[in-house]
Length: 317
Image 1 (tube, rainbow, N blue to C red):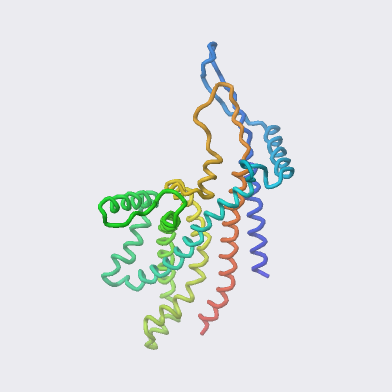
Image 2 (image 1 turned 135 degrees about the vertical axis):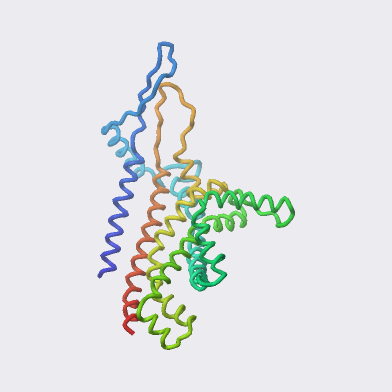
């Protein structure tokens, strides 16, 4: 019953959030210009009108309800087909990046914990701390330049880092998307293990002479999983936010790339020009992005709710 309540709560939050974003995207783009006697440009001011806003919302609703497939994107392709195709393309890098971040990040966190009192802690917790301190944008650009430099020196084969038509493009994007979430999960895993080791049942297991690896993997790891998995929604948020950077820097033609294209304005305008903006595809991409976050939150809450009773049982043993 508690799980159903959480799912309903997440559904309501998602719906409210999505509707607010739609209302925001449909803000009128009316501009009032001030020009000189010779018609030269002096100033421009944004003018908001509630009537214009309501009119824009009604116009959008009428359009999507009277045009199959959310209208035409271009010849023989509807907006819905275009949006879905690009979202599916991005999913081919989002899902592998998510699993890579979780699995490899947990493994790295276990290594960090195991090596915390050893010399290997430099490449363990030390490296995790270092890479969490460096902006991922800097890391991505550095990796791109390093790949180009290594290829020029003949140390590695040719790797296509720009575009979205080869397997190289997908693998590179998966790698770039996974960088920060990987170290984030490693840090969460390490912190969870450190908090768990102080519990009485761990000290009891150690006093019984149980091997440290058995304590680590059977007791600590199992009881830390709810805490680690509860951060799945945060990992998804990091991946989605990085998606906009990665697709832009690698010219990967996915959902984030075309979302940027849909909201981009020309820097050139004429005095008296009004900026028309009808964000059908923009709102379509927003729908999918918020759905990803909704499912991530829901799955995280469900897994945590199911795992917590098991955690309590194990503590009582």
